[in-house]
Image 1 (cartoon, rainbow, N blue to C red):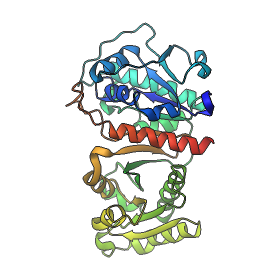
Image 2: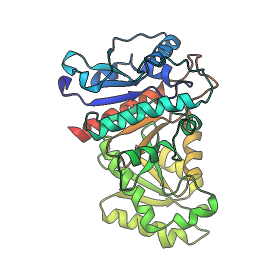
Image 3: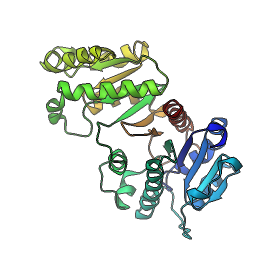
Image 4: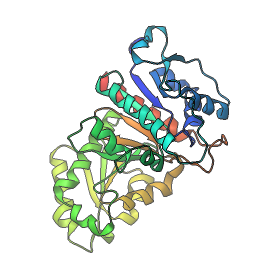
Length: 331
C-alpha cells in the first residue's frame, strides 16, 4: 500500500445522472491524494463525466484488482466494461444503468469482504434504475448489508456540516411509528451513532434525542420509552441528552451548537430539519456496516445532469468522511 495509505473504492454512480461528472471533479481534488484510489466502473462512463467536467486524470487502468500495484501509483481505474461500450442517455432511468451500478457496487463489496478496500465512496444512485437493473431491496443500504453478511443493527446516517442524524424508524407509515418507539429499539441508533462519530474524530459525541409527541408532553412514549433509553445510554458512558421537542430540536442541537448529532423517532422529524438547514450540503453514511460507505445525499439530479453545474461540496464532504473513518478504523 503506497505510503501506508488506506484503499478507497470510488464508484461513478448512475451513468445518467450527475455522479460521473462529480466523481471526475473529485479526482482533481488534492484530498484524494491521501488515499489509494480504486475507481470502479465502465471506462466510457468516466470519459463522459470527464467531457462534462472538462477534467482529465492520470489514472492507471486495469481490468482486475490483482493487477494493481500501489508501489507504482495511488490512483487506479478498475474497468468493468468487458468490451461493452453502452451509450447511456442522460436524465433517463434504465435497466442498463441499474445493471452497471450494481456491477460496480457488487465488485466493491466483494473487495471489501476480502479486505482489499477499506472504504467505499459512491456517486448518487437512482433507485428506479437499480430496481429495473435487478435490485430486490428497498434501498442500497439493505443490499449492502445483505452482501456484507451484516447481522448487527444498521441504519442510515444523514450529515450536514459534520452534524449527524440517525433514526429509530425510517420508511414506514406514520401510524406504525409508535410501535417502534421502544427502549430497546431507541438505544440501538444512539449507540451506533456514538460509535460512528468517534470514528469520524469526535472523542465524546454530544448525542441529542428527539421526543415523539409535541413539546415532549402530549403522550406517554417520552416517559415510558425514550427517557429510559437515554438513561440507559448514559449508563453506557454515552453523552446523551433529551428528549428534545421536534419543532425546536434542530435549533437547539444544530443551529445553537449544543450537540454533535441527534437521534429521532421517525423519518420526517429528522429529514425536515436537516434538509431545511442544508439540503445542498448533505452526506449519507451507511451506518453499522463493517467499513465506511458514504455518498452525497442529493440524488442523481436528472434536471441538471450534463450541465456541469452540480455542487461538488457534498461529494467532497462524503469522501472526507469515508477517508477519516477508514483511517481511524485501520490505523
